[in-house]
Amino acid sequence: MKQKSEIGAKLVPVVVQDACSKNVLMLAYVNAEALKKTKKTKKAWFYSRSRGRLWKKGETSGNDMLVKSIRWDCDRDALLYQVEPAGPACHTGGQTCFGPRAFGLEQLAKDLAAKKGVPDSYTARLLASPWLLAEKLCEEGAELAESRTRKQVVWEAADVLYFTLAKLAESGVPLKDVIAEMEKRHRRKEAVASE
Picture 1 (cartoon, rainbow, N blue to C red):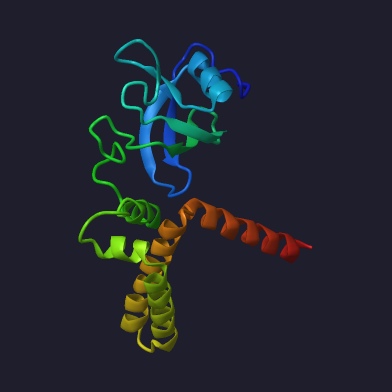
Picture 2: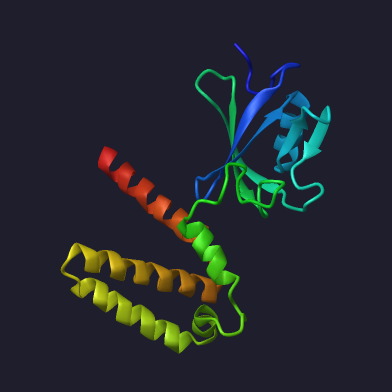
């Protein structure tokens, strides 16, 4: 059986996944040297079949990937890299190599943060005015609490999520920090339940 650190001379496929959003970003290949460099530097290194050499993701675009975890699949013939991308994964400028970017809260959070200082933007006005943002959060939270129909709950929950993400952007807090806190609470709850 193959050892984790050895893949020999063959190329192994790597599914690259955003560690926060869980979106699949790309498929690439590694040889033993690329895997070793990835583990050592915590940056994604691959083997380019078309160029016949190693390449560091982002070496020309600057869109490198911080590798958070590396896992083998059950047959130990493919790898999963969970990464924090510094920009689009695809050489075309797309967020993923699999077509238009998928909508998700992580992307919305990034989009909202990018609106700081954008003229004539409602989001920019919110981010520049903590009292207005606080007022909207309270208002939308109350409207969600008072919602009675499914349609109302969906509508008001979307508003609450938008203003919550705006608050994160205004505070400079990435959504991944909130998700990490929720995961920590979930693990604690599971640990208590298994006692």
